[in-house]
Image (tube, rainbow, N blue to C red; front, top):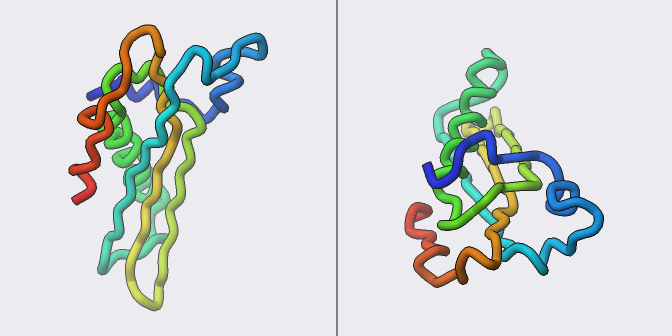
Length: 116
């Protein structure tokens, strides 16, 4: 994993750094996202299975975090379905905070090939 799953938080970047610090002064800020459409499936039968699906994508978010990420904040999860078309959409996103003193971002760090 690029970062530990316990470093993925629902709090805001400002709450993470505290009121006396400007997020942009201390961190490079990068959006991270993962999504999946599951055709031939629907929600509703088993809430535990629905939460497992979201948990799996939070783990994927940890794996695709840019190198040097200290934490992912602003975690958002969405699980939706279209019963008439029989598919489920899972969206997970957050904001990676990368300490500025540790390194500069390169294009390779922002590789999105895993979406292909």
